[in-house]
Length: 235
Ligand code: DER
Image 1 (tube, rainbow, N blue to C red):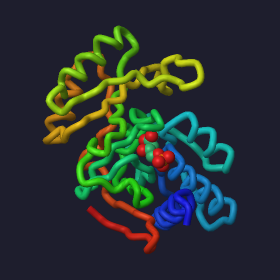
Image 2 (image 1 turned 180 degrees about the vertical axis):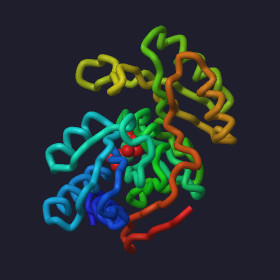
Image 3 (image 1 turned 45 degrees about the vertical axis):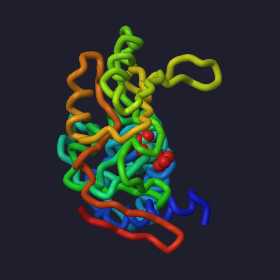
Image 4 (image 1 turned 180 degrees about the horizontal axis):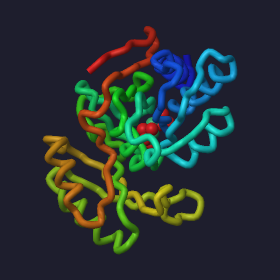
């Protein structure tokens, strides 16, 4: 099975939790994309009715429209029934790293407003510790004096051997700009960053930081698709 086939299996499993009449948070990324497509398919087949989708990015907004999911927003629906989204990393406590697709702010806003948050991953996303895989830990910051903020973030995690890099479009090297007009600093750690809650609070206290990609204590259900099949784990 390819990684994309595993993502699709996890996504389809998550859509089994969707009931007619629900207000749904629609995730962003290549795994959530399968869930959005599946919801559209079931609506078309009449197997799902009266669904309202709250997208977590402009990209998901477009995809949801293309598959016929009626959309609204958090102003209209401040409490959602269920969100389905992918993750870049999942630790054994269902803490997540998200945001390598750049949508972390709207994802965190939507997924914090949900009664249930189902995370869908292929098995390659499972880690022992967040931020330990040497992959990016995204932090959304305001563009104003971004070098200053990047350096403050690097110093904050100096003991963990942190490198802070402004996310740029590979083609022309221009800074990546989020749906909200902000920049993203990707943090890379050589060593474990210790208590995630402490790290989270410290990052959020830094003026200039908008949000970070650690989703702590938010997911309620984890669906993992692997070579041996698909597993569902509740918090
Ligand atoms: O950027 C994001 O937050 C995505 O949801 C990411 O966490 C998972 O993306 P993927 O399903 O394409 O791996």
